[in-house]
Structure formats: structure tokens, C-alpha cells
Length: 251
Image (tube, rainbow, N blue to C red; front, top):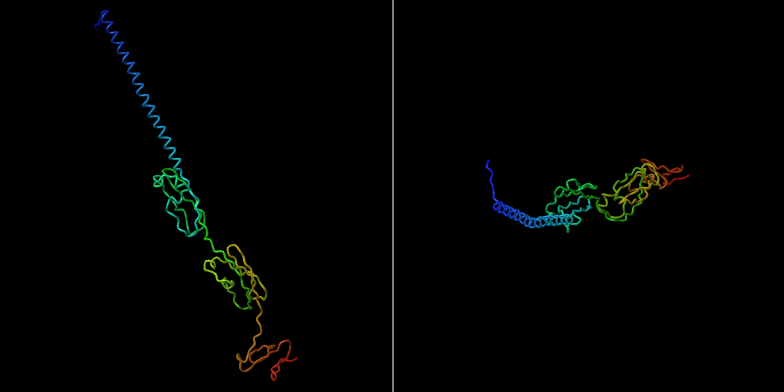
């Protein structure tokens, strides 16, 4: 392979050319570096600002759920905003993407249930308490009941209450007659409970009295007050004898 030989003049020209080219490359590098650096800084700044905005939006759209109470048999709302503690601080776009699940709630049975709201991959849990319906406040006055052995005793609470009561109140009364002995003469207490308040009154069970037949009941015979009738015969009490002539009980 033949080598190229340069004379002194050519070598000088070549050195100057190479030096100029090197200087050009250095200057170009400096210019390029100055141009690229601001672009990189700008892109980084935009990313930081975008992240800050997203974090601020997430904080603003933070989902907080309410604990809710409803009365038994009350329909539950299907409006998601009714379940949000901070609905006014959440964007409409976020609210549109929320999903409400109330499938675990039984409005016909008093209890505490959970509902969920989902957003993207997150799930939020809230409570719904289904409580018994609030009953009206009333004052109850009970009757004193007189009962004769052999008579039936009503189990209807209305029989024992002086006031007129609604069906709503009636359905929530508890009548307790467990102390009453209908076949034994005596005085017994009975109770009615409403809204946790128990009222007490007496039932008096008596022996049956003598049967007195008056002329209207039997035209053939009329016994004196201190006698009982058995068929067509008067029987005096306390060992007295019955006098048909005078229709009296005598010693």
C-alpha cells in the first residue's frame, strides 16, 4: 500500500483545516448544549407542575362517605350525592364515574348495613342504619277489671285501656296477664307495656253470687233474697227454714 506524502506547505494547510474543524465542533457542541438544556428544564418543570395539579385535584376530589339512618321500610336513595359527605368539593366529572352498591341493605329489617362507592380501583365503605319506626308518645290509663269465675278474659289490649288508640299503637302493645288466675277468686295485677314503659292495674276475680229467680224469670215461684232456688224449691241460707206460706226464711 502506497503512503501519501505531504510537503511542509500541505501539512500546514491540513493542520489549519483540522484545527478549524475541531473548533467548529466544539462551538457547535456548546450551542447545542445551551439549546437542549432549557428544553429539558422546561419538560421537567411541566411534569412537576402537572403532578402538582393532579395531586391537588385528587385531594380536592377526596371521597368521604356519610353514615346514614333511615326508618324501617323507607326506600333508599339512588342519588350518589346523598351518600357523599363532601359532594360540593368533588368535581362533576368524578361524581359521574362513581358507582354505588346498596345491594346488601334490607330496608325491611332493622339493623346496620354497609354500602360501597367505587371510583376507579378504589372502594369506599359507609354505613346505613335501618331503625324501627318512631312511635307516637302517648299516656295510657288502664281499667280495673272485675271478673267472675267462669267468665272469659279478653286478650285484646284495647279492652283494658281507657283511651282510644290507633292501630299503630295497638300493634306495639304488650299485654301481660300471666299473674291472673281466672278460676281462683282474688285480686291480681296485670301489665301493659308500650315503648319500654310498663303500666299496671288490677283484675278482681270473684266467686259467682246466688241465682235469684224473680217472677219475671219464673211465674211459679219467687224466693226471698236470702234463699236460692233449685228447680221449683227455695232453699234458705244459714240453716233457716223456708216458709211457703209467708215466702220467708225463718229460724
